[in-house]
Image 1 (cartoon, rainbow, N blue to C red):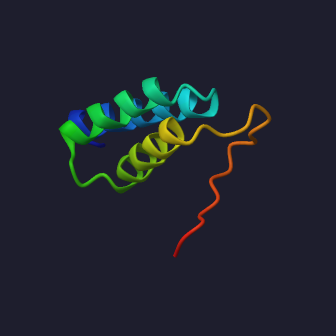
Image 2 (cartoon, helix red, strand yellow):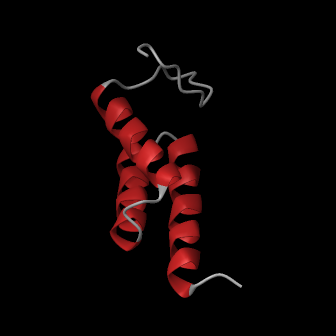
Image 3 (cartoon, rainbow, N blue to C red):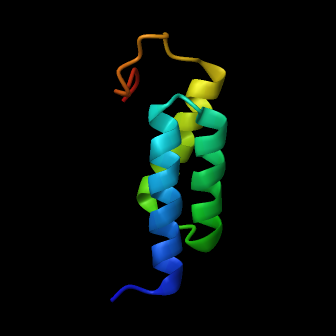
Length: 73
């Protein structure tokens, strides 16, 4: 069994991913930020939070397939 806090993080992450796929990067970023308020060390939420910021600053094309392409190493 997982803790109540971990379940909240998982639920927020799932909702964030749903919004991310719909290109609602602002809404997704809020979900990931809320997850990080509960567990600041949650790696997946950290990654997607950063990706949302990237896409808010640099929107993907309308036909975006959801794949993140790293341009730097």
